[in-house]
Image (tube, rainbow, N blue to C red; front, side):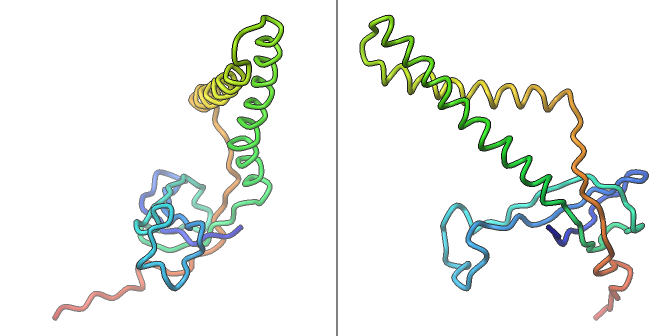
Length: 153
């Protein structure tokens, strides 16, 4: 996947880039009047990448993000919590039925929700202590900030 981003800061060989997040609707013609999922506000994502094209602050560059990385992130954020919801819900329901607790389905639902919360807490804890290589790389400069001429009126 390729994304147009803007370089907002340089730190040695690294560049901090910012991109406008794409909305789920794909920016249709009714965007200005749409209120679906907060699409009325611009949302931005920031990322540090190696400045392989020697971009400067203000340059617009093309960033390449491998599809495999996006699939891994999606699996980790969506599939793993769902699997923990189902598995822990099943285990808690079996225990509730065997222990003859009232309303085993309610216990199962509570166990599933606890599993999801525990999974996200674990991911947050792991993220603080591990560095993930995103493999995103700059491909080329689309628009150089130095080519912008400033005219006084």
